[in-house]
Image (cartoon, rainbow, N blue to C red; front, side, top):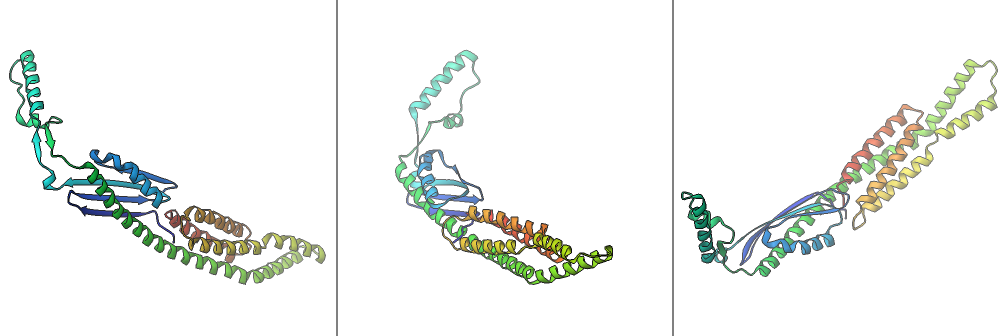
Length: 287
């Protein structure tokens, strides 16, 4: 099953300790790029998060952000009285130097780091619960990547069918085009030369038609189409292989275009390149 690299998940999980809100965004990238925005108190969980993501995803730029708030019973606040006293003494010393009129007010003191102390919270338990909530968000992300991948697979298979149809058209009309080209050249040469060396003309035409023969390119196109279909049915990361196959398909389409001796085959070659480019753009999102 092909997975898309483009997905989004948001999960709100409430526990007896806190409410956790995880958001995970994933977009296409050549490699697996992981970025985190975590509260200062939970920076330590970044290592386990990276391990979980590496085991689950292979490619994509992934941004993970966490917001959490402790439940009311976990938010009891107390004032660090000793620190407040120290701040007051320090303020008195400053006032003795610069004079009165610059007294600290209560709000300024409360803003000082460490003045407000939170009730004792089991941070290990909070960290463990945040990781459990992350697992739920990650599951949701993978589900969306799977759905997106299935939609991309349908899109690509439709283009493969159209490419198959176009190459079948070339095979069907190629003998007629070559015969018409042969007669056209015979008539042109007959108009120019009084005495026509039929054998020499035939040799030249054989050389010309060998250069214009695209059977080999069509066979390779069919083989590449079969390989793309086989790859789409594989499990695991297939995006890079599919991207390589698009390069090979495009190479054969370009050769078909360069060998074209008819406006019909030229139009078909152009249509092939359009279809291949459409697939290539979508494959950039496949893991």
